Length: 446
Picture 1: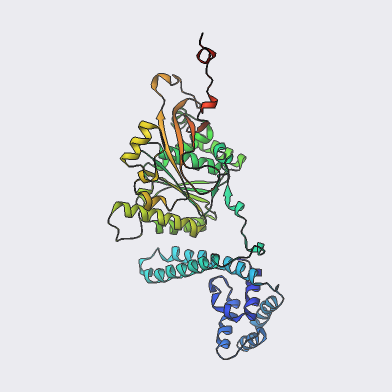
Picture 2 (picture 1 turned 90 degrees about the vertical axis):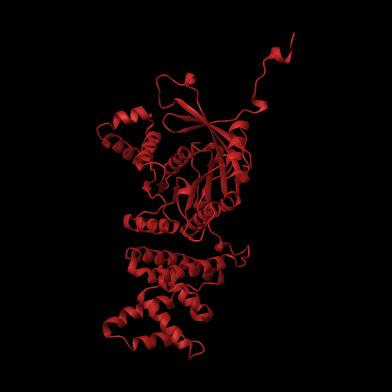
């Protein structure tokens, strides 16, 4: 929130007193907060307080050293641009968003001491108030001529170098929950790590929450993928130290302008704690996280304690992950498992299961904007390279679209990928009838 926006909001409120209670006090400076406080006091006894009457009353209580700085603040308000209703709503939305961040930062600091729990609870209520107000603002009617209220959505999207998605206008978007569904040992972790690597290569900063494996294994796959190493090559080069591979990764990352890849082990963590720790990490390290990859949604936990049924728990987890994406302006990528019927359909028939075959089904999937199912076929041993190279094929993934909220892809659209020894996936289009060449002797038998 810039100081310019604050001055514009304060000047608007002078002429529109009903908006006084809408301003989030958290974003204003001490002098600006003092002005707002005096404003509220005078509004109880005067029909329409003026900036002059407010300033005069405050200056009567100041010492000589403070008067000049206070006068300068008042002058900035007086000469601020006069905005219209649309400009006010836009500035107010930004102010509420920034206020939410400031309150969350206080929550993170206070949460370190259990004795502050009452204060933390009050602050969470304040976050909810700010959030509800933002939702109300978003629901206000907008005239098509109010172009300045529109956000540049393309600034919140990223294309990650997967031709299948790029060619069909499917970016990764902020405030969106993505999910993969697969069988047990069906490659969910491989797919999510590959997606995370694609994102950091596109300049995104990713927090990867590892739950089913040590973080060292996650980083190993990232190094393999980015540096083009087989597992054997990686282990040989790191047998004594990680220094050589680590420095090579850093150099390449700086050369290519990659984003940061941060891995944590938080098994069983509740989703509200993910929010707190993420905000604290960003503040401590002066970094903005663009997205979270949750290795397996079932292994985080809901903040609700009265959940008995597993399907209800999973539904709450996905609901809270979606809310996290919205509240923190990030995207969240996770995965969930197919039930027995869906597994049978995917393995035996090689077709995309329906959303009803997902464990947790509607309770989980209706919170997602985009869902892919994952089918993994391992390459038979007799077809594998005897001497494995980074491009050696270990298996084949097929991604089926189960749910699509934007772009050209629709349910049951699919793409095949070869999974190589360096943990990259290479697109291999699924052949159609038109792509299959039939020999002449079959078309025209003698």
